[in-house]
Length: 105
Image (tube, rainbow, N blue to C red):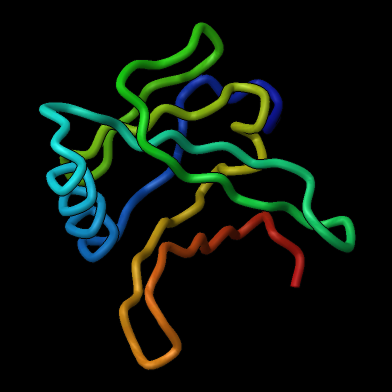
């Protein structure tokens, strides 16, 4: 059952891991993790929140993908199960995106 997840099943692409490392280096952090959460978004959808964190909160679960530590908010973990975080840099701009098999089109 999704609500009983205790281990985050989230992965990064090589592009996302590289971009995150570049951002962390540019900010001058010795070590940092990607903080991952979901909040209610427009039209009943979800808004993915990605950020830099130096340590987990009491409610975060910790996992790793491609050498990047991820802190995942335990309350929104079931909404992230199987998600893949990518980074694109193209004509339409650059940024992180989340591909989530649980998201409705």
